[in-house]
Length: 426
Image (cartoon, rainbow, N blue to C red):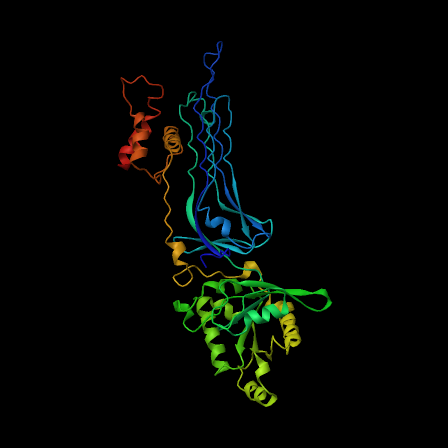
């Protein structure tokens, strides 16, 4: 899998832009001695936006783009000049991409349609300039609002293929052979298990120029939910399918038992898969005669439509297509994207090598200076006890200590609130 271009699971660090600080500027003109406050508002921070792209089929571009940061909003200036908004970052993803929180595994959002845009992280709002705070009793406000902070989050993107029929079976059950026989797909076929190492899609032609999409996933075995074989990693690609086609070879020791094992593994992955329409195809039926086929038919699971097929000779393929088309077009089997319940990520659904990826980021000197500047613009009207302070924040804000002998601009009673709040926080 390391050399494959098919990437369906990636972990990235996203951060929206923080809002620009409002300005504390005062109007200055030769013949206007008391022009009053005219500080403009700060610009909003940039958003992180996911956009569906039907021309993409893998998350490979994001595997080498682990950090996605939007632009910060610029601070306001005099003359009520607004700061420039931060630059949004639009990330193209394949249709069918689902986003989870990397820390908690909580489902966040999904992108299912081409051109659909989902705002993953919202940029911070810009702060208000000091001209918003002027009043009859406060004609010279020497403070302004800081911009809202950025939102930083580590997320996991999962790709769930959009197909009508999903093939489920043990290794060497004939899934890839069937896909190659009914579509133009060319999956790898060999006489050893786990030949298919990544999902494959094929468009199956039907009568009257109609068609449907079939998805083939790597084979699963008993105990896959505990990590045996390839585990359940690829079962996410059949969660959106309307119909599940179980395939069991005719030479199996107990067809009903193998069917029950496959169904049980699906339940452990996502209980919602049990509610999907299921069909059973007995592959490699060219090895059976009529008498043996009748005997096997008596042992098949009850309540599951079944058909004997052979992808090599074409036996039963037309009947199989008819059964699949009736199931696909049945309105009771259609599961729209909003109705799909995405199970949260847990130990069985995560990819270890991605989860152990370590993010490291150090702010630049310019970003540290901008953070200190934002602290200087905090308004007593917008102070909140839930603000997070660290040593750098304290050092940046200590300039506001009220000192009778200090003649610096801004060192007055209006600013002393911040010093008191810092002492209370400490």
